[in-house]
Image (cartoon, rainbow, N blue to C red):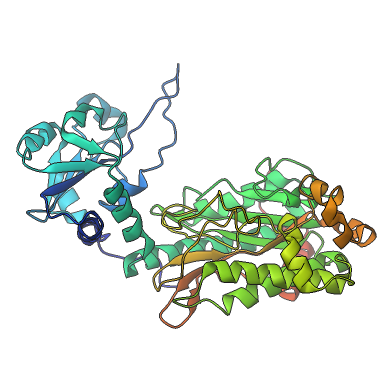
Length: 467
């Protein structure tokens, strides 16, 4: 692993790409400029502490800048990208140190000009012949709203379609985020002697991310055990785990605003129960089957529905679905939607559920309703492949008390509730002839068992922890 990319984030190329997409979609050659304000620091109410800052992703895409209170302008006619730094607060220098200079910013960022925000109104006045598009009017750009046109459909389309296909610099950022995440998941699997609560799993992951320079997570980590693993976005992460057998951790480190998103499951004592391993291997088969279908031109709908068919075949073999029904009958009944209720995966980029997927949450088909990616695959897309299988009493209530109950052998089903659920998730780049898997942490159940047992063999004394 060579580490994060060196050099400048390709902001100028991104701005040009957005303009090209805009012109194509709007079918207009009118003079246009793009303006986006980044996020600024905001105080908690009645407090002198600031809230954590999460940079505006559209702003970052056109600038590569994390500095609070900044703005970016792209003038298409002159092909000029200008970064506006916040005005210097001389009172703040004593507390926070000197800000980045204009000269240093020019050297660091891929922009043509760097100015202070105090010059913005004058620059806007010089653009009266140009439409200046922005995403929305908010607290960060309200001072300039008289110059701005917000909410343009073609502008959003251009931003999202540009972000859809990752360039080589973005890919390197995402590979690095994934590499950090691999080590964090390995640390969690390895530290069972000191992980007596779901919070300990959460802490272990974040500790190792921070040690590798990743100060932020792509999303709130999901750290659950036993029956809690049946909740898709469980984030309480605070229950005791020593009497349970299964763990699911869905967590991803972030690097320079780019996300990773990985899920792994393992047995707490390193020994898979019969039922846990059966479901784990079934989900692993769902993932390997769909991964083998990934290539440009493939329909993500088809991959997702294939995963359901693999689950149905597996449930027939395990006896959870009654064998007097065919796989085709079960697929048409859509009963599998309650055991695999989410989509096979989603686009990944600066957002965990990245833009450009074109989901249809009004789809009447319950197998497709929550699928976040509804388009054919293209080289340069980064996405997750994350099939799952869950035994959630709430989700299954309508199945077990409705017409679909006839498909389910409840005596067999009862054996699986204690697992909660299994999800296996990797991050994949669609290539010209298939895919590249960014995720390196093993998903092989035998290897996972060895990692957990190796950690257990160290005992509590083998780890540095004071609480």
